[in-house]
Structures are given as C-alpha cells and as structure tokens.
Length: 208
Image 1 (cartoon, rainbow, N blue to C red):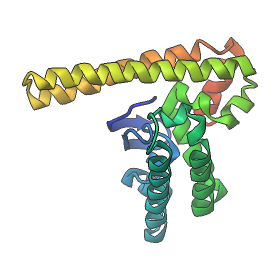
Image 2 (cartoon, helix red, strand yellow):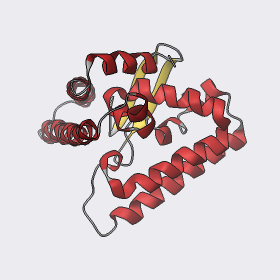
Image 3 (cartoon, helix red, strand yellow):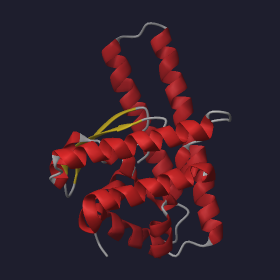
Image 4 (cartoon, rainbow, N blue to C red):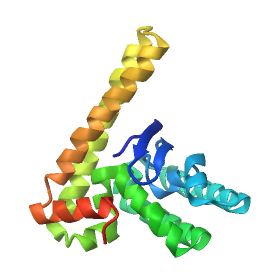
C-alpha cells in the first residue's frame, strides 16, 4: 500500500489499530514513517530515548532528500536510485536503534502496510528470486502507480478549489487514494508468478 500525502488508518492483522502518515518523502508504511508513529512506539515498547532517536533518523532522512532534490526534479524516492543511499541509511539506523528482533517485526509490518510496493525492497526481491527483468518491471509499475496517485490528488485538489465541503473532501480523498492503492497493488502482484505470489503472501503474513 502506497498511501501518500495523508494519514493512513488500518487494523493490522498482527499488531491491531495503526495510524501512520505518508508524504512526499516517504509513503505510509516505509520504515521511516513507521518509526515516528505513536502507535508503533506503543507496539514496540519504545523508550523516550528511542522515540527521540527515531525522530532524529527521520530528520536526517528528510535532510538528505532535500539535498538530493535541491537542484533537480523530484522523483518518488522509493523508485529513485539517487535516494537509495538515504533509504539504506534509514534501514541501518533503525536496526542500530531497535536491534535485530524489533527491526524484523517492524519490517514485516512495513510489508503488510505497503503491499505490492514491498517488492521494491531488495530483501523481498531476493527472497522471491525476482529476475532482473521482473525487478525492472516492478520499478516501472511503481512509477506508474505514483503517476496515478498524483492524478487522483490533482482531481481532489480541483474539487476543493471549487469549494466542496471539508468533510466530503476528506472522505473523497481517502476513498480515491485507497482505490488507487488497490489498483497499484494488483498491478505489481500481476508481475509475479503464482509461486512468487504465494511466497509473498506468506512473507506478509509473517511466514519465513
């Protein structure tokens, strides 16, 4: 699930109610968005010092992306090779902060929240034995999903500009974004073989 530019609320099958924010730096469910969610702090039993450390990881990540895109065109960071070092540093920093066990739990939660977008993660791609061609197709499909999400957001913004009610705007944005996410998830899963889809389902459900 790629929900971006707003709050995502869901009931995770293993962790229960969860709220997490997505924005132009990271989609909801990426590690850097999970570690600053109060619900995740509670789920992982994070101390005050760990919460402060998570905020610092988030700050450094955003600072790195601002540097990357300061003089160039913005691209969705999760499909942009230029952003990969910053994303990898988040992974390393989270493991240093939380330890291997809680990071593994957090990574599994990320896969469940993000759905098909988790196929962009190297560890998922390796476990599923995605071919190089499949990896290229996954990246291309993820970029197509981002374009569709941007189109949906532009439509909602246009409705707001015509003076629609705030409540209907919010519910309309949520519904449109979720439909776009569902379609994008299906587009990505269609790139997998039946065996890979079954294995991916097992990963998202906490299987090994």
